Image 1 (cartoon, one colour):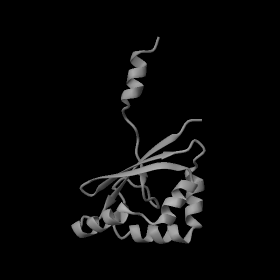
Image 2 (cartoon, rainbow, N blue to C red):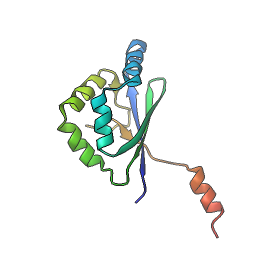
Image 3 (cartoon, rainbow, N blue to C red):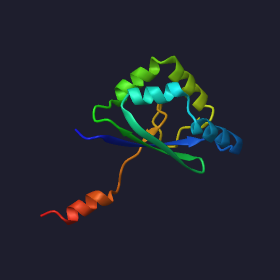
Image 4 (tube, helix red, strand yellow):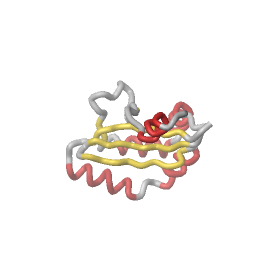
Length: 121
């Protein structure tokens, strides 16, 4: 089984001061949050921003389970505190399913996959 990559989207409140505060909080996340992510098999996580749109790239161990991470997050008071704080800044995208936060994106192109197809025997 290979490592997994997840790409997700979320919006921010359209407020420059809130966006600046959100970015400041992410320059050094709480150590408990980083430890929680690692303990769930998150190998790397990046968040990119364009205006109010956020894009997360999350690389995980092969055995990563989003359901298990959701359950562990719900049972962790520090993670719940962080998530409540983050909702001050975050807004669901127009395409976010009810009850969700970060919405999975659909991959529509991969140069690597195209290259492999071009060079198949």
